[in-house]
Length: 367
Figure 1 (cartoon, rainbow, N blue to C red):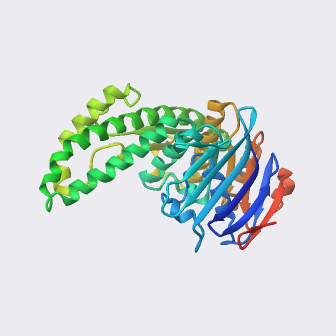
Figure 2 (figure 1 turned 60 degrees about the vertical axis):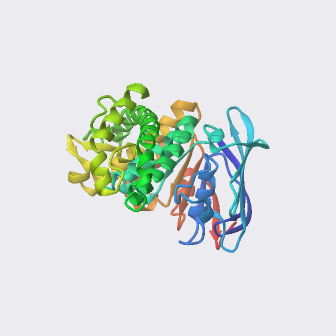
Figure 3 (figure 1 turned 90 degrees about the horizontal axis):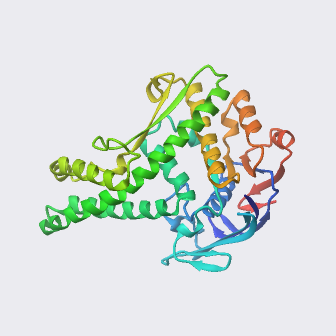
């Protein structure tokens, strides 16, 4: 997969830019706050009309702007294609694939894939469960259109159920809808669990190999998918998982009413990470944590490649400066074979080491 060119207008701090990228490594240099990450965000947005920084599309529209337009000319699935997304305040976003208006973002699934690695991901191992769910959601949504739809439905139902639980004292009649929401929430959750279990299984296999190489075969990395306790086999058919989710919801019904919170469901999922049989979150050193995070993100790239037979774009957002020389070299040696975008404050001879094309960003303009 190759992103030939990117056109953006009214996106974050960019007025209007038309950029042509190289097919291999592209190095984006600039001081902090100039728009380097915004540029990667625009690229990533083309993969599924989802930002990796915010849930709200309105935040992507530039200050004092009424609309934003992002368009990418790409080579994917052995042909040239165009993805265009238009955002307008107070309106539903418009998605066009090869000039044809699409009904939802699921149409973009698999058209352009990308793996993002940022300094925040170096804390993936020690962060809360939400960061690991985000890892699963962003990756799976790119290659499984149905997952993106189920995730959107689950989030919608979750918000409604939460509102019922919080408002039911003032509006007791809301409780009449609770059982119906539980059924639909369990149905959507069963689908998410099914897809997540399959993804984490592949991620564990790929990450353990990368981690072994990066650690000099001194340590072993293991990833295990965790969901609600009543689900005995997350890889079972969704119909079976649904029954077990309903059982868990019924067990916690009174607790949810008392707490006025959703305590049961796929929004509690996590990935257990161990290094050498020890829980990484509690016992891993800073160096071990970074190696594990590095292995997980590079493994994500490998999974996307295996699924589509094309390397996804690799977006390295100021992450190399956070790594020591050994880990830097490991990353740079493994990014061959696909298009890469690297942001950094200074070149630090990365261009010489990768043969990359250099772009300079200053105040929302690209040179």
